[in-house]
Length: 280
Length: 252
Ligand SMILES: Nc1ncnc2c1ncn2[C@@H]1O[C@H](COP(=O)(O)OP(=O)(O)O)[C@@H](O)[C@H]1O
Ligand SMILES: [Mg+2]
Image (cartoon, rainbow over all chains, first blue to last red; front, side):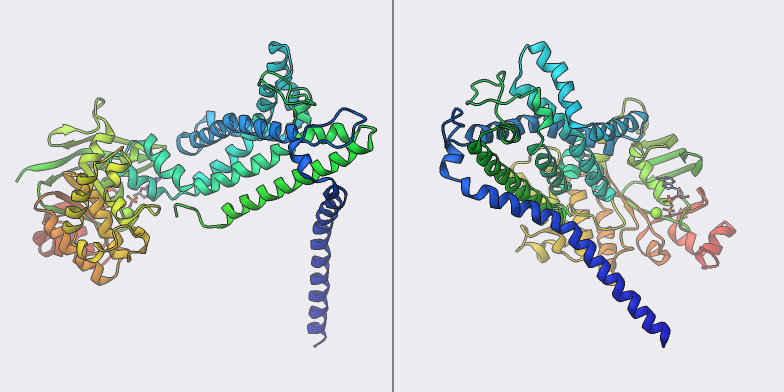
């Protein structure tokens, strides 16, 4: 009897503790989001999405160039990061098992752990210095370096989940291995791969450090990929540390837009991750 | 009768495991050969050697030779992909392509390899499905997903997909072990019909099935071929003691 009471008490205690910890996880997220909404919502306007920043002293203006710049950087980074990540993963999952694949896997894990400011420095040394100038290309390269390990590892995990029997069915029909890999294995893992890609995009959308000495930022529209280009996180950073009240407001609005986009991307990634594998 | 496939001192190793030990065995053309034996005796391993499926298993080593119409399929200048087009395979668990319709599954051997003309496709789908006696059951829902079919229908679909690419030999690895008795019966009837056009090699752990469907039976034990002969002989007057013990259910 007393033991049962004790057990009930223990159970109650633990349930309460778990509730507290759940809240501890949720509260910071809610606080951050609520704060950003409160500070940023009043500055969201049509101008914010269509105008570029005004010169200091003038009020108004927006972050249109930053948004377009970020979209372009993400697009360029994806053009490099997604194929390298996906095909690297295909190599590991389908043709790996050798020493090379161990090395690649290790390199990807190390790359994933490198502080993003270092990634920016590498892109600076490899592209900015030889090309004698900051550029969108250098920024996209730095972001791609961050994407690759994320896409590679999630894709590899997804490919491993595709049943061997499916591959064998295709091979036994006289389909070459490379076609089987593309049309059966990768096709079956497509939704999982999408999840990895979306998470990688969400991750690089907010990266600031690797852009500091690559894309640099730009107060205006940039005309060429070899010129410095504006990006949301950079603009938020620059405006937030400026002494002008009006720029602070723009920074908050930018933060709100960025967080909302990332939230959307994470939701989409969850959606793809949750629904059953497309092929299965 | 001609020998379509001939194994000659075939050995298969997986790392340190010697799974198939010096097997020499002939498979007659246009007939059904059953491979029987207790589980783990190397039946699947022998079967998979015949369409070079081990090529993709790291650590697997095949030695000796396998002749298809007198040509060694393990010779250096032979393309395994071309061999697999001539030697099709049906697996233990029905494995239609889950992202494809019934129609596309039948022509998957063509689609995965490139393109197929629409008229040709229709024709291949109809004739293949008729051959496996599935046409009447699915002709009104060819565009439905293949996973909507029952297990037995899925397995017949897999056989249809295999014969659609016009192989000469069909390997079957316990094709009925995941099916109910009625579906099993249908597949067995089908095998009976298919042997007119194809050389069939079927692995089974079901001795009644071997007795019912096969012309020749090979009994394997611990990676070795113990005995091979006409099915009625093997089941009534086996030469080896081990075969008799296995067939009468004393072990296995
Ligand atoms: N891919 C593999 N890797 C290592 N060992 C294997 C592999 N496939 C089969 N074997 C081994 O080879 C032997 C024969 O297996 P198998 O041919 O599947 O037997 P059966 O089909 O007669 O039940 C078993 O000892 C099994 O453990
Ligand atoms: Mg087996």
